[in-house]
View (tube, rainbow, N blue to C red):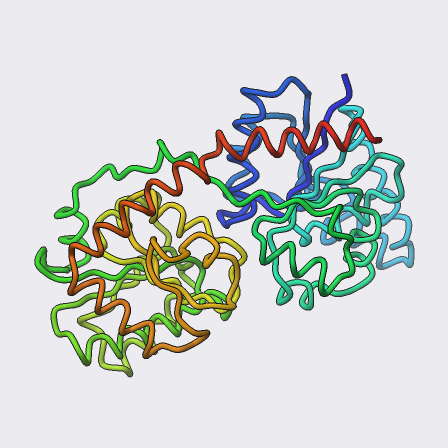
Length: 385
């Protein structure tokens, strides 16, 4: 039986690789096709991928850029030879499972596909990006990937519409399968009081949670500004940003200090169990400027937290709708602060919306619902050849 070559743009602990890893766990248990995994480089999740299938990262090639062999050949004017040798290594790995399909997870994998060269094997591209990343990635590799893709999966309707509107992809070639999580596995290991003690937040206080990498897209700076507005209106409210890398914390702490919020805003850095922190909070504030369909919101919803997000910033309004929180105008921090305060002041409404969020994520976004749909698309793409 032909296999599937899954190509991830990385093995870092971020949305698209985590989504792929979760699907592959389901696929291994429920599918019957062999598969292998190709990565551009090693990362935090490599061991998890290796547990599932044969996994190889390009930086393990004897001829990868920066290696001593390639450096030596570059010095004597034979860099093209090293490049050809690296491509041969990549292609040799790619053919081991006799793939009947190349599954490209993220448009950021375009440079890897370019190295694979032209092939008759059909390509299925799972798109987790909006136009911001298309513009950042623009170039021949991305244009080639879009042209060579036989079928697209979009992680939200916002992503699907962007593909059709901005990149002239025919609607028939794009299917939306919203991001998913293993809902039953999203549960805290520590009680609320333990986490709040760690964060130095009183049990009686309101706690607003945000999180992710602190990048321009994710809006960590907007989270600090939101805290400033809310804390001017309510004294017994705290904020916690979960998951920044060490290199990003200094930027957030700079704004926190100058805004006079040192006693009100916490930045945890990377944590191993985000569910502990989400469960200890009252409201999840998504301050992202551009976020296709963030997993952190689904995880917060699984823990019965209402979500406040911006309209026009990605796919989360497709989940929130009118029963799981509030959607406010893009970058309108005053409106977001107003809705956050309303939820903190209205425990009955907060609990009702949190309960609705839990029910919705169970019904629509469990991996047991998304997995079969993705597998069906894979099988269809292979059969069409």
